[in-house]
Length: 265
Image 1 (cartoon, rainbow, N blue to C red):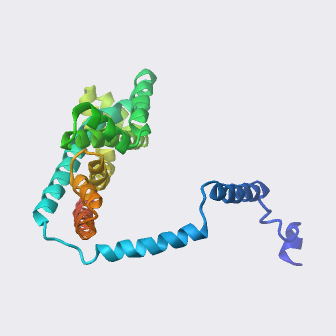
Image 2: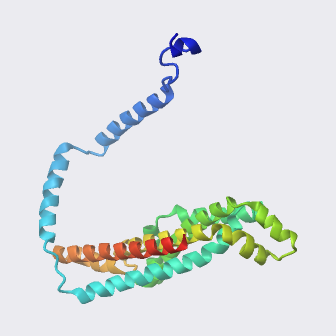
Image 3: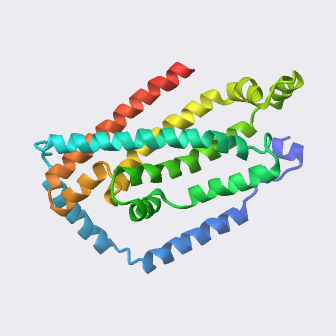
């Protein structure tokens, strides 16, 4: 007797069709086709864009590093913005993450804290950078403030989620000794999440290194301002030099962060 007959199942019953999923995919495909027509996305425009892109790339090479002093100055400023924003964001996110963790804080503390973190995450950092540029003027301070807000929204949320996943047995054991709240955090909470905290912080530093380039385009300091000025002058060979230098800086930061993660294991 065959296996389907022995179990009383017909052929194909083991994997029945998921009609809601199929209808959902069909609806998604129909909407994608509709949105394409509304946005005037055509093969002709794509073909024209490919030709323009080829001419644009041809004007970028070979890269021009003659103004390397201006390039280095912008990169150093972007690095400073990223490091300071990451440090400030991490320091502010630690208490926010503890207050937002529902297994350590009462609801009337975790609720408003989570709402504040959501507000920090709701606006794109470029929009926040524009607001700070309008408020405190052009320069690195606006970029650092914008990236600090973005770092708080990201790291505090991850901190809170990591703390909520810890084992409460260690927390209860330390509390049973009559230790104060600071000792509970130091000896019961932080040892369980320290490695994850380091990973979150390193990722945010990498992210801020990239984002510091973008906020500079709106006047918030860093290499982004130099890049935008080069675009406006149609100085595309210098644009290529800036992009290559930025990529090299990101790669270097990735290597360093990888070494740090390996050392923490």
